[in-house]
Length: 103
Image 1: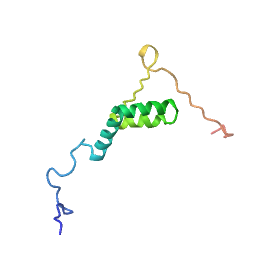
Image 2 (image 1 turned 120 degrees about the vertical axis):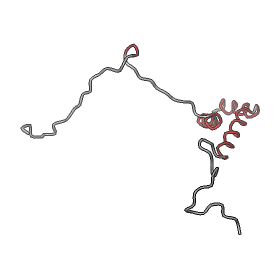
Image 3 (image 1 turned 45 degrees about the horizontal axis):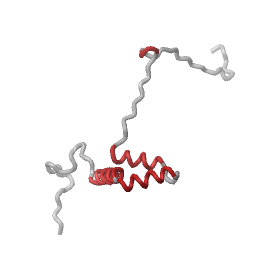
Image 4 (image 1 turned 180 degrees about the vertical axis):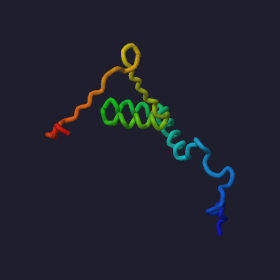
């Protein structure tokens, strides 16, 4: 009979489970595979040929880079004139929809 390490209702053993922030093995293996593919000379040669012939979806390459090296941070800063705050008035339009104007 296999030894049971954890019984429901008991406290978790110290050091059990994945540490906070640590990625699981599958994620690490996919990242390593994507990096290996992207740095392989033969793969790069075939990739360039596929792109030239338009036989490969560019989204696939983007996804491969995201898996291998992470998605870049996407930021957007909005400001008013000369970097100041955005100025403007808010206008609200309420249609009357034939409502009684006396109330």
